[in-house]
Length: 608
Image: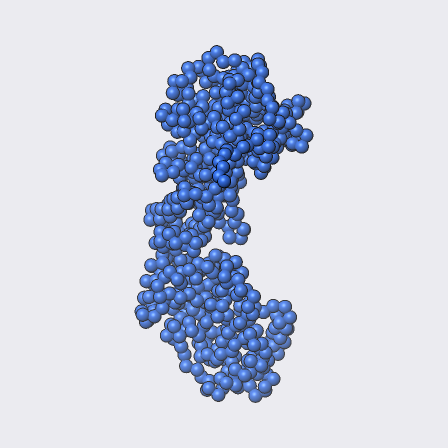
C-alpha cells in the first residue's frame, strides 16, 4: 500500500508556539518591531530614489513612545505604510516576508538589496509575547490610499477597520500584558534600544531624544576617516577604556559582504581578559556578542564590530548557524589581521616592538591554534630577552648559532618565566655567555612547546632547569675537586638530610660561584604540569602526578666542601639540610613549617 499527501499545519496550534518559543528572550520583540519600522522607511527611500515615489520624504524618524496610563507601547514610522489589502497579505500570512517580496520585485533597480533587513516574515508576531492585543494603524504612501486599522487579541482572529490616521506610515500599538509591565518602564526600553538599535540606519527617537547613530564608522570608507574618528568610535563602543593600540577596518564585497572594525586593546596582564567584546551585526541590527564561529578563537580578545548580511542566522536572528560563508569570513579575518601586523612591523619596527607586550598575546595564541596564521606570523613574531631586546625567530636562531660551538647540535634556548625570581640563575647564565629569553605570560608554556615543534633542531630550557645538562651543552663542564668516594658519601649525607624520595640527588662539578644546591624539576615534567594546570587537554593527568625534583649539589662550592670536611655526622646533616633549604628558598619552594625552621636556623647561625 502506498499513499502520498500534504502535511497539514493548523494556525491555531502553531501561533502559540511562535508567540512562546520563537524567541528565547522576550525583550527581542522591540528589536524586531523597530527593525520592521526601519525596513518600511528604507523601502520608501528606495522607491523615492528610483522615482517610484514622487512625494516629499520629510521627517523619517522612527518614534518609540510609552503611555503608562493606557498601558501601551507604540512604535511609529513614516515609511511605506500598508493598505487594508496589504495587511491581509503580509500580516495575516505567517512567515510571508514583505521584505523578500520587495527585494524580488525591484531587484534590477536596487543597488544594495541587503539594506532591507526583514527576511523570515516572523518578527512582527514577537509582539504577542508581551502584549494581550496588538493594533496596526497605517496609511500607505500610494496615492488615494485609505488608512486602515488591523487589530488582533493574540488568537487567530483579526479585524480590519477604517481609521482616521492622517500621516503616511504605520503605528504599531502594543497593549502590554500583566506579566510584561517592565516594558512600560522608560529605563527598560532605553536599555533595549541601546543594546539592539544603537546603530540602525534610520534615526530612532525615544523620550524626545534620538538614541542611535545611523551612520556608524564601519559603514564609511576608510579613506574618509582619521585616527581620531576611530578612537572616538572606540569610546562610543567601550566608554572609559584606554585607547586601542591600532585597528583593522574590514570592507569586503566579494565573495561575501563583510564590514566592520576590529580594535587591538592594550593588554594589562594583571587583569583577566574578557571575551565577548566583539559585537556582531546584520545590516546594522545587533545580533550577539558571541562570535566564536565568525572570529578565530585567538582573536576573540579583540574589540570592535562585524556586520555581514551573509552570516546565516536562525529564524529568530538570535544566534549564528555555521556554514561555508562563516568559515570563509573566519579565514578572511585571520588573513587581514596577519597582513595588518606584518604591515605595521615593516613600516615601523620600533613602534611595533613597543606594542609587542600587548600584541604578543594575540600572536602567540594564533600561532598555537592556527597553522595558517603561524605561516603568516613567523616573520614578524618576536622573542624578547632579559635585556629587553627583540628578535624575530630567524634573527634569534642566528644569534644563538654564532655562540654555539657545535653547529650540528640542537640549538638550546634558555628562558625565564619570572626574571626577578630567577635573577641569580640569569646572572650566572649570562656570565657563561648565555642569552636568556623572557616568557612570562601564562600562555607561554604552550607557546614554548609549540616553537620546539616548529623551529628545527631546537629545545627550550628554563634557566633554573636541568643545570648540569645545560652546562654540558655549552661545553663548559668543570672538573670536580672531590674524589668519587667523597661524592658517594656526600650523596648519602644529602639523601639523609632531605629524607624524601621525591628528590633525586646528584653531585656535579659546577662553578664555585654557583649556588651550593640547586633544586629543579625536570623540564619536561615541569612544563607538562604547567600546561595541565592551564587546561592542557590530554596533559590533565600530569596535574595529579606526584612532584619529582632534581637536587644538584655543587661539588666545587665552599659550603659543600665544608660539609665534606666536617668530622661530625650531625653537623654534616645540619649543613646539608641548610644548603638544601637555600636551594628550595631560591625557587620559592620553602613554605610553612620548613620556612619557619629555616629562618630560626639562620638566626641561630648569625648569633654564633
